[in-house]
Length: 78
Image (cartoon, rainbow, N blue to C red; front, side, top):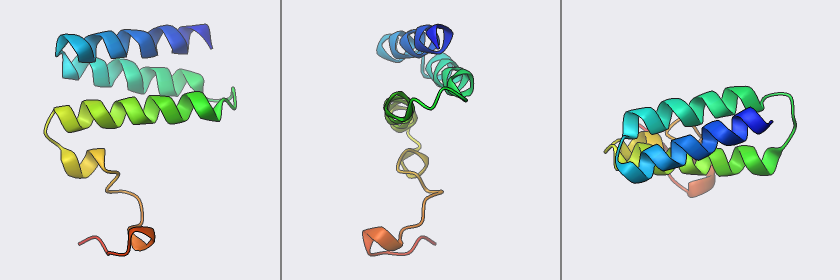
């Protein structure tokens, strides 16, 4: 769990420095390392940060979770 937290922090630092590719890699690696700990709050925060990094890179559809069903939002995805 400490490794995942450190990677998440490094991902945040990379995002703030503008290194979006490194930020994405670090946050995704942190998510992989977080598996099995059942810390859903931390996973949610990591996913939120990953969405911000993805949006900063210009991929707003992916940042918005284009994989998620849109029925709950009242519109269907194409």
